[in-house]
Length: 257
Image (cartoon, rainbow, N blue to C red):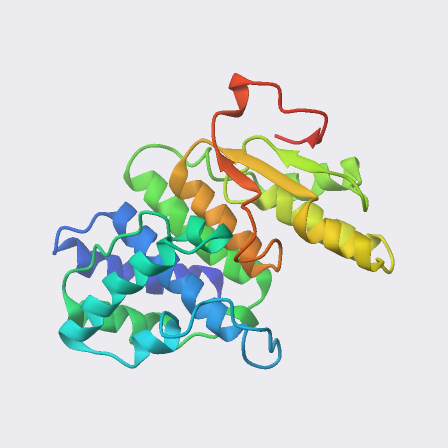
């Protein structure tokens, strides 16, 4: 499926939820929670076979196993419990609330729209373009503009190639948005630095990337992206802080903006 097809498929359902008073922003927020849980579950299966980092009974299968009022109650419980988890996982679900009050529509979103797709096996550009396409549509709808979220990918790639990040560097993006620059830097180091030793791999995963983002929900998306790309850990401190980076010295790290 093309990125435009995925965006349209997910976006069409938003028109149904608008009849219940759900805004585009609320819809995208709920979609990020559910997509994150679905992709986290996919990572535990082949070909990834990674250890699960979502606690048992608060994961994607626990949503699929429920219907009706039981699903709605469990979803609210799940969001609250995950928001109390330590580290990056708690940041992802901090203050999360269920905005979809109709259990039938919540079930349809989970089963018919999200569960039918294998998100982790999609081409990275298709998956990323579809996700960003939803944010773009939301930004257009609320008339806030998309500048706080998006830097064109060709520009990101060009800047990363000019900066040539290398193992051992500390890279800070003081206006990180959804993490495009940080993920591109991580990918560049992984692909172009030869075989990294154990210390270099650990530094790249836990200490190399930091960022600031002034919008809480955007920072949430960035932390989701990092976790799903194997950066940091669910119980590790978040490398992304919600703050205004212009109010102080960002330090000596290499900064891109």
